[in-house]
Length: 272
Image (cartoon, rainbow, N blue to C red):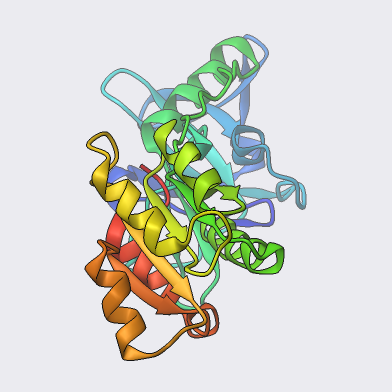
C-alpha cells in the first residue's frame, strides 16, 4: 500500500478488511471522524498522520481504508492506495536505530525499491491515541549502544598506517595507531584490542620482535596478529608465521580484498 508518497508492506494475516469509503459516510463523534461498519462506529485516522508522511491529500470523494484492530478496538486507517500482494524477504532494521514507531522490519520489492514493513500492533496503538486524544505521544527512541571491535595498526610509515586505518574504519572497526613495535607493545599491554596489524621493518622493535613479545606476555598472548609487509618471499612468510602471527599478507592485499577478509576471518564483523 502507499501512504503519502511512500510504499509500506502490510501483513495480510493482520488485515481485517480493505474498504473504499465514501466521504459522505463519515460522521463526527466527540469531534473525531468515525464511520459505520457492521453496526459499530469505527474511528478513522489518517495514515499520513500515523507515519508522519508527506504527499498528496486524501481523495475528496472517496477514501481507501484498511480496517485494523484487536479484540477490543477497531480503527480505519486511511491510505492512498494499494499495490497488490507480494512475497517479501523480511530484513531486520539496524539495531542502532532503536525501535522505529509503527515499523517492524524492511524488505525489497520486486522492482528493487525498499519498503518498510508495518508493525500492526504499534499502528493500532497509534490509531487509538489519535481517536481518543487527537494526537500521538511518541516515546523518545531508545538507541542501542553498539560496541565495535578495536584494531591496533602498528607501522612506521604514516602513509601505510593511514591506508590501513581508512580500510578498517570504512568496514566499521574502531582503529588506533602505533608508530613502531615499542609503541605498539605499550598500547597492546593497556588492553582492549581485538586484533593487531603489524609491519615487519620498523625502528626500535621490528614486527617479528613485536609478535614474539606479544606471544610471550600471558596477558595478551592470545591476541590475533596479522603481519602486513612489502616482503612477499615464501621464507619471509614462514618467518612471520613461525613467531606467532595468525596471518601474513603483502601490502598488495589492500587492493584485492584479502586484507579485510583476513581481519573478518579472525575476529568477525566489526560489531560485537
